[in-house]
Image (cartoon, rainbow, N blue to C red; front, side):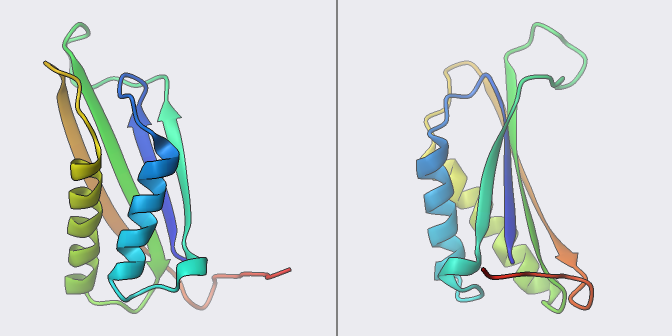
Length: 118
């Protein structure tokens, strides 16, 4: 905990390892998470549609952070804003490409979450 899912369309040239590291550093810097607890992964989307204009130059990336329940809506909003700001400044966006960045933070039920350390 937490788990970070970073989805992006294949028409974006993203250094995923560097981006994931920056996102993890930002989450640690927020003061809400231990450094070794964050599990981040990048998922490149090869099949996607943005809108209804098939030839439009469009792309998106979405950040989904799942955390144990108990944090306030204000903290979740701060984390959402932090993730979007971090990824926005890390990237060079293709010229003429409309890029949408979205993020959300959702709860994992604390009572039902399991973790084994081996």
